Image 1 (cartoon, rainbow, N blue to C red):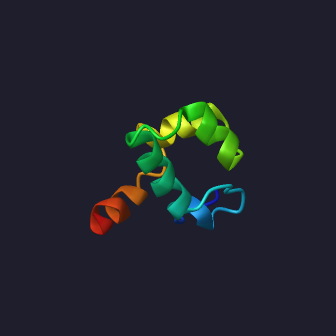
Image 2 (cartoon, rainbow, N blue to C red):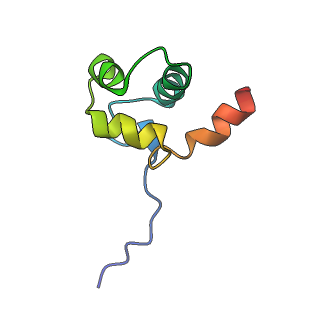
Length: 72
């Protein structure tokens, strides 16, 4: 049996990532400030609306939360 106890890539380090940590922070700020809708953000960043929903509701890209609080 193989040992799959290795660290996973997170965020923009993943080979299939379309977003960067900076994009995620910008998405959260734009939505928080009511500058854009989820659909507009999804179209702008080339991802689906559920991806944006997961980012905004902190179901994905949670590691960016520490970065956001550090910048504030």
